[in-house]
Every structure is written in structure tokens, then in C-alpha cells.
Image 1 (cartoon, rainbow, N blue to C red):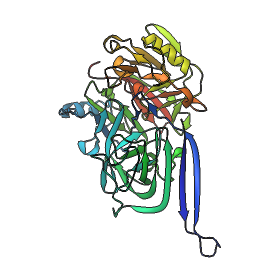
Image 2 (image 1 turned 60 degrees about the vertical axis):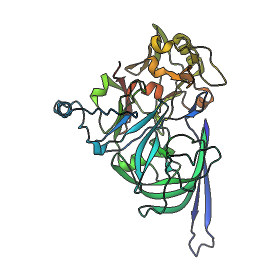
Image 3 (image 1 turned 180 degrees about the vertical axis):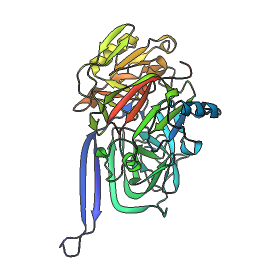
Image 4 (image 1 turned 90 degrees about the vertical axis):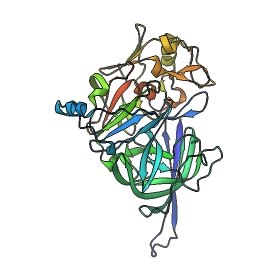
Length: 414
């Protein structure tokens, strides 16, 4: 999906320049990755902070089980993982049916629940005066930014950003932002208009590289000095906690070893898929082409070249591709007895079960979470490894060493 981003800046010219106040507009066209199922656009964004902190990710549940002090001590004593932070350094990430995730952050002195996205880089929060024509604003329980907050300043700039399923525009502010107690002072957006964001969450928190920021000086990851992040995503059916670990890994969350591939672009978290393959019921289906691949927590689906998607879904037992939904229907029986889909990337072999790749349509029917990249791959990466894959994989974004790592995630019911 091609998206355009317009940033309008008003500056005051020097009195001797012979110019009045100058307004400049910058329009940037980029490839963004969003996904849509038969019901509505679905998002799942993911986040980052920095300095040996662990962000816990869980569904809403009355049971919150934390590692015992004995387990924490043993992990540290044997050097298995960096020290797990106390609860003051963690952030709950609420899972909405494996499609949307929100977590609490602080912007200025105010707290919000935001969507977290490694497929974009800007931070924006809903403004108190924001309007929409589709219900993106004015929903019960939504919070909005109070611009009278004395800890932030209005830069006098405005922004306008279009995504594959919507758009936002508003004013640019500067001030402190914080996730899991890790703070940075950056520029961020406060919306005045929104379209296509009629889902839980008070804003969007981008975590990709600064090179794709549309709001200048608005990159949280570089501002917070993050060296690496590692994700364990829970499946909604397991009702367990997920976990984001900063500047380390949690070896209790994966089996085997982490295998790394080089990051090939400092825009998205991109790598070369050459030599990769799927294995289903003993049949090996090689990756086709080498147009690049992205590990993207901001995409729900696992999107691959069209012919490859047809072959994988046929091996799974899915029905024919539907151009109206952009998905492959699958029988409900696959939930309990569907085949394992093994994904080989570099030296890693990650196994996806039905609880990862079978997505509920909300009406008793199901669709495969592995689908065609379609026009989204035109002129850009041909593979987007979204949450369907990332829930099965423990993934490490080693920014300092410019590499991505994958290992088999360990879930409670595995």
C-alpha cells in the first residue's frame, strides 16, 4: 500500500529577509504495511523502550502470574538473561483477539493507551478537538491530549499522514514521552482530524528507524537509546502474558538457540529472505525471489508472494483465495487438527500451529492468516512477517549489531 505523508511547517522569516512568514509543505510517498480482513482493517503495533527493562504483554485476565523471586534469582545467577525488571519498569500490553495491541505510555504528564508499531516511526496522540467522519474519535473510554500541559510546547508545525486504512493530521508538539519508565524528549503529533482509526487506543507509537519518520526529530527508539528489543507474543487462546525485553533476551521464552540474519535496510526491520522455505506435511515450498522481507509487528498477517501463498494454503487445506476479502477460508476443523507450518529463515526453523495461523472472522468462520502480498509488494519487500509469524517466533531486533534473530517461542499449551 503506497502512503503519502505531508508535513507542513510555518517559520518566521528574519526581518531583513524581505520575506513574510513562509509555509513549506513536504510530501513523502512510502510503502506502508497495514492489513485488512473481511470485517475491517486490523492493526497490531508493537513498542520499544531502553536500559535493561522488560515490558510484559498480556491479555485482560484476573490472573497475573509473575516469575517467582527464586526463578528470577536462578536466571540471573546462571547468566541466562539480563535482570528482569521490577513491575515499575514493565508495561501491560492488552491483546484484542490477536489483532490489536495497546499499552500504557506517558506523554507529557498524561497517560494513554496506544497502538505499538515497528512498521512506522512517528508518535501521535488523539487531540481533544479531533474530529472524524467514521467514529475514529468520540468513542467511550477514549482519552485525548490536554495541550495545556506545561511540560510540552507547541512547535508551530503541523503534520498530515496517510496510512493504508486511514489518515491523521494535526499539530506537532515537543516534550517528554515515556514507555515502561524509559523516557525521551521528542516531537510528537496531536491530532485534529482522524479517519480509519475507530479501534481501541488513544494514538500510535511508531518504533522503526528514524529514516522513515515523517515528524522530524520524532523518533522514540533513537531518542531513548535502545540497543535491542526482543518480543514474546502470547496467543489469545492461551491467556498468558507476553513480554517485550529491552537490551537483552529472556531465555525462558524460547527453545533452542536464536539464529540471526543481517538487517539490510535502516528503514523498516528488513532482511533478505533468499534460501528460506515453508514445510507443510513434509512438502518443502521454497521462498520465491529475493525482493526483501520485513519483520513487522504492525501487520497482523503473514504476507508472501501470491503464488507462494496459494501453494502454502493449498498444503494447509484452505479454500481458494477470495479477492473480496483478500484471505483464504479455512474449515473450523483445522483449529484442532490442522498441520504444522514450519518457516525456515536463515538458520532458524519456527513452527506455526493452527492457533497462530487460523484467524477467527468473528462469526464462527475462520480464515488463514497467511495470505498474498498483492500490490503491497510492488516496488517494496515481497514478504511481511507479521503477527501470525511473530506469535510463533521469539524475535530479537538487535539494533546495535544490525541483525534480526528468531527462535521457537515457548507457549503454555505447547
